[in-house]
Picture 1 (cartoon, rainbow, N blue to C red):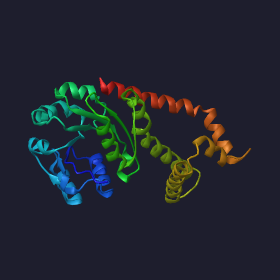
Picture 2 (tube, one colour):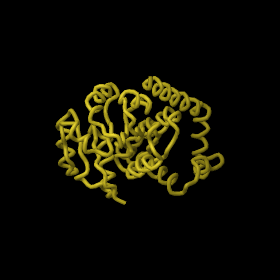
Picture 3 (tube, rainbow, N blue to C red):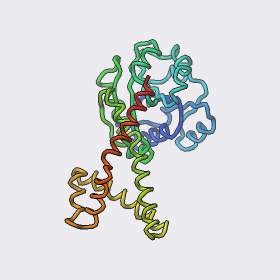
Picture 4 (tube, rainbow, N blue to C red):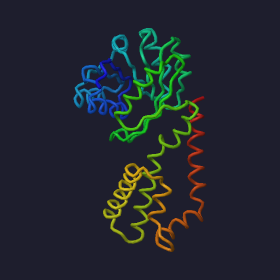
Length: 270
């Protein structure tokens, strides 16, 4: 179902490109209904060439026309952007923020207008339309507006509506999570090389193993615990490896790492 709304993206980095790509591929929005802005002109020209969207250096004019404004900027620049856009915001506009660590209340307090603010936290697999996006609403958002935002983010993967209190944990899980997976894949590759496997073969098999295991989790809809047990046989190779992980308290290491990420997210929100 096509959404005939005007979208304006402030900030045109990788996540903006992922969102636009998903929206266009799913035919939710037409290119002529998308306008992008960024301080880096090369990013804008790249977006224009790739997606045939409009670009502008004038935020005010684009905001007046926009129904939905995406904030995809660095947290340290957000107050400056608010000063630029505040006077141009119309009453029924929806602001969707994917700015790390910035709460809906912070945006509402600094915009100083009763506009609908939705916070979204997509992750980098959105670049291949396999993202995980958490959404929450500010005090002036209707359920219909929230569902519209969910439809937009569902075009780049899975989207769920959560309480904003959960966002610090979600940051540690799905926000930072892809890097944990990439790191573990890297470690498995390096271990295989150390055990005598050719580098290219080690990389190819490590990547395919992660891809295949991920697809099994997704397609079978079985829990990771059950699938793990199906790989393991008594006194076998898998059990030997898993027992070593347990003896080294891998769960404790993962917990502490995610706790650090969560605490950092809380720190950024202050």
